[in-house]
Image 1 (cartoon, rainbow, N blue to C red):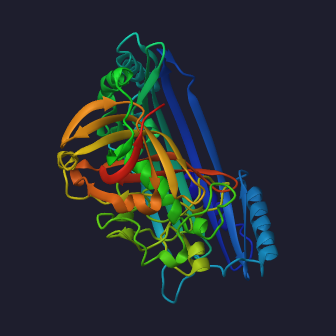
Image 2: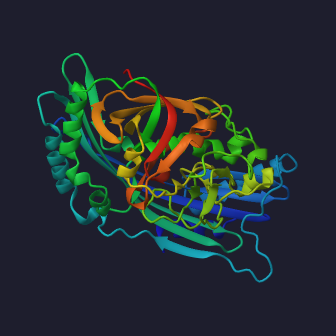
Image 3: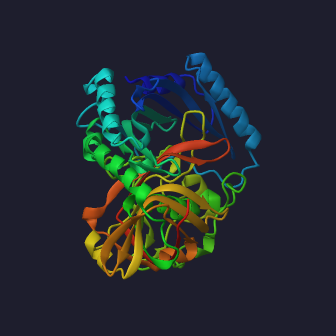
Length: 484
């Protein structure tokens, strides 16, 4: 029996008498390795484990978390959760969804899955990993003008178990890999930085991920592009076509589609921390979110993407759904509780970042479906425009509508041809109109699987991993500007 499964069984033996209970056990170990300016960084190691108990009693729900995983510690947490459920009875904002409740003849869920990498993280020693990072860091240092350079690897091994009073047992384990490269070049008056996705390269798996994403061969290019930016002119200013690379599309998706569609945010629960949403409940099924080319899916079944799973943290089975289809808004990012509260369709996206946080509505794998154009086809459509890659800054208003983004690198496009590199490329827009100006999407061969390791939401804060797969996207009539 695994660690988490053993803890879940320990709680089941000491659970309080109530209408329904669940225990979610999470264990995680993390390792961070890095080399900065030729010096090995302090090795970062962490381990964390605990359990979240949820109890339904009458019309109330309560929860309590504990890192005391002894039988007595779990029993105390169960008693605390029951006490809160009784206090909450008659005060809930919506009727409780009966999570895990079975109809006549329905069987309990039994699911046990380990995400198996092709090459395990521990297939080579820590010493050898650091040695390889040294080599990558040296390849970044192309020139004396490279004044800061680093290579890093982060790995997290996670196991979770959700068990319920209805007999459900859902176990999952996976490794998460986040590689990083950074090169900053300076000529004494200006500094330009180029990175390997700036944290956006994140996958489930092991050492095999590093081969799949081209980590071991990217350092020379990153160093050269940092130097190239020093000599480049500023991005021009004006309204023009904008071709976003996949590693910029993912943050555009995240901020101006993902967060606005979170159902608890639409209901007003997020107003204190990160704003609400310009989306309202009456928009679903009718609102033109984007052009007819825009198809956005919640798809937790993509192998290797950062937030792939079979069941969410409330035990709801996860499946692919179109949130936006043919440009029309169809479905929210709302888990079972928010769906019950709003009486509209959602998805299986009740997620928690840790054992000491309740599950809330979160993005998971939120993807833009591929179009039909090659990258060259997209460039060929542009008479006057610019392409931008790799996000460096972002700002969006408290209704997730007006935004401004800055990127690491741009290239001018004239008469269907890629031209000079430009530095400090930025653009701004309004979510409600930006996606309607989508003119083209790359085909399946241009799609990149990316994401973020630290999407923040909730009070107390929850930083969670999110996956975004996308092709490059071409947008018309975008306000573009330069400057640092």
